Length: 193
Image (cartoon, rainbow, N blue to C red; front, side):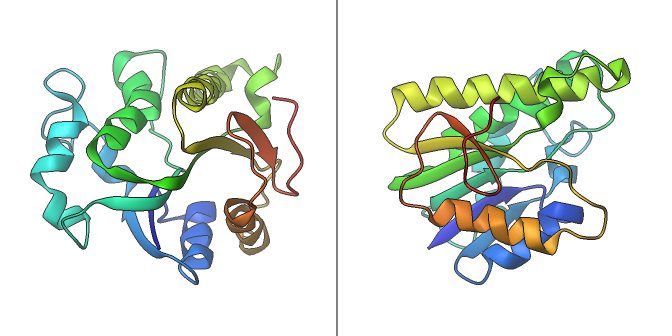
């Protein structure tokens, strides 16, 4: 089985890719590739879809671009309430989905934050806003698609202790009873988000 993960080169993402590699052939699109400076097209001229199609041989091991699992774990930095932040945190996920083939039983997930509803810490408002937008993108796709779309809300992740939560996140993808359109905690329960 094949998986596609965005981010996946540091912290939780690196641990997730390592755990997922036990059961999947994992392809990683690193965060640096998803930034405007490294993307030949970007949000103002054709979006990332054209770039992904033009460079598929470099990104994927085969020509089929078919995946059983997709996990959006990247986060664009620096962020603000601007076009690039919105595109690279949210809309890029849609362009990636348009550029690949999903199996009929594919599971697609986004990493989100319980801080979405926070009333404190206005300095994190862009981060929380884009995570919230991704929840709503997921719900929209879930209502219109046969694949399983969901989000993972991991709670507080402790620096340098990512192995256990990464294994819990991988286990979520293996659950047969996942409902499309839901946000899940790492223990498998439905989050209040």
